[in-house]
Amino acid sequence: MPGPTPPAWSSGLEPLHHAARDAARALAHRAGSALADSRPGGAVDVVPLDRAAGRTAAHDVRAACPVPHYASSAMDGYAVHGPGPWRVVAPGSRAGGSDGRRLDDHPTDRATPSSGTPLPSAASAVTLAPGTAVPVVTGGVIPDGTTTVIREEFATRRGDVLELSQGSPRTELAGRHIRPAGTECAEGETVVRAGTVLSPAHAAFLAVAGRDDVPVHTVPRVAVLLTGSEVRTSGLPAPGYVRDAFSMSLPPMVDAFGGRTVTVRRGPDDAAALRSLFRELSAEHDLVVTTGGTSRSRADFVRPLVQDECHVLVDQLDLMPGHPTLFGAARDTAVLALPGNPLGAMVAFLLLGGAFLTGHLGRDPQPFAPAIAGEDLAGARSERLLPARRHEDGWVPCRAVGSNMVRGLAEAQGLLSVPRDGLVRGQETVVLPLPW
Image (cartoon, rainbow, N blue to C red; front, side, top):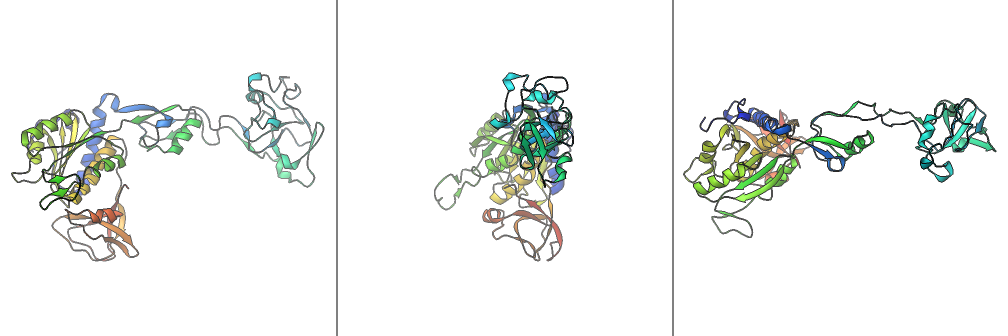
């Protein structure tokens, strides 16, 4: 294929012409991974947990401690040793531990059950003697030697003598209401796998597992380069002009796949000026996305630009809409050149842009899901991916699904694959769920 020598990061990628959907998508995913691996440190950041949600774990993450990290009470009541009755040992007494140590030997941690605060951490180093009990609250430390926790409502106390209340279930004596250390996970256990998109719940669990930060993949930096002198950014265009459909749609689509659009520029319909702007953007971003100019007329400046500046990896898709799409490698960045028609561009981005970004982040690409055609659908010269919705009898294309249209995608739940031979109602196919 035309173009310069392949950049080192892309040297293992075999170019495709008139590429089938799955092959092109797999290539873009490998390209994202290869570019990330070529970055210093493998494009990995270490971030504090309060900034981890939404990021992608770069490595397996292990617990720094067992969770919970100490045995605690699940109820307000009494930790006891043996079948009872028991002598209640209040915090501060020396009689509770077999080694004679006080339960509040650490005065800075001192607390009493009446204050509603768990017992001091020193209690975990004290062995509760047979026939003794100590008050505990929910979440409080369970002293060594505890055989069960008696719930407050099942306990009768007279002075320092504690008994199980008359009529209380004997199951209270069977090791109840104790949360052992390590019941959620053991120290050193893998709690997050590489490639996991971290949720707020992941961040919370990593915190209780003793982690303060987490290694994550660096967010890919994306530039969007819009072309077309006929494009208007506001108002009602005159005949022959069109409204911009990309500056407000492509950046959130980048975000949906874990990237970040840091630059949006409008390029002139001038080959030399466009080339200069393209080189500027490709030097500063992981992915440059262009719109328009990918066909073969004399007015299409982007196709020859990509062929001159990039090692072209995908030259056209065997797919409608989105056929005149290019994907390539330019020095230290990837380039995705989308057609100017809105639906064609967005379908191509969902396939290749999404695959590249997930590859760069160490994630698996969004899989196609099984689907049933809800009506007969005619074939065409290439596979079609049509905006569609799921109905009772199966998936049915939306209205307005021409490559120059947008309404169908706005109403869709997914992109329905219609093979060359078409589909009959009830036939199995696949659908790509939309990331929004």
